[in-house]
Length: 155
Image 1 (cartoon, rainbow, N blue to C red):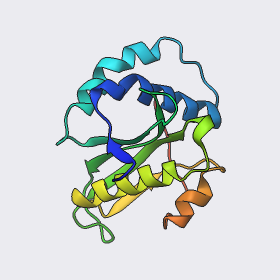
Image 2: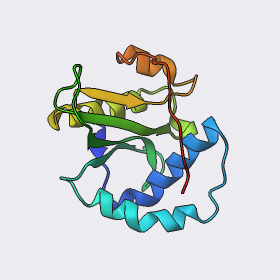
Image 3: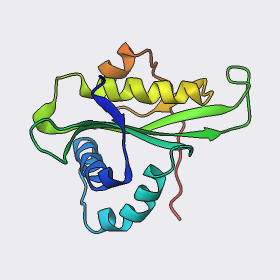
Image 4: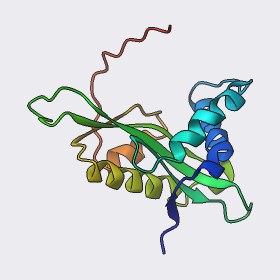
C-alpha cells in the first residue's frame, strides 16, 4: 500500500498549512486572511478528480488529520511547439513537508505521484521553480535548470 494519496476537500486546511510552510521557507509571508479566502476555491478543485488540478499528500503518522507532505500541480494547454507538439504542460507549484517529518522521502513520493498524474494527462513538459534546498530533489528526478525570462503583472 502506498503512503501517497490524492488529496480530498477535507484536506484543504492542511494543504493550505503546508503551502504556508513552503512559502515561509522560500520568501516568508503572512497567512493573514488569505487562507480563509482560499478555502472555497481549493475545496472545489480538490473535489474535481477530472479537473486540471491535483494535490498528492502523505498523512502525518503522529497527528491524525494532519498532513506530512504534499505536491500540487496543474495541467494546461499551450500552443504546441517542436519539443511538445500537443502543447500539454504540467506545472508543479507547491511541494512541502511538515518540518517534523522531513528526510523520510515523503516529498519525493508525492512528486512521483504528481508526475504520474501528469503523464496520464499527456503532459510532455513539466515546469517548476525550485528553492536552493529543493533543487537536488528535482535534479534527481530529471529536472534541468533553464534561464528564466519570467515576468509578472499583478492586476
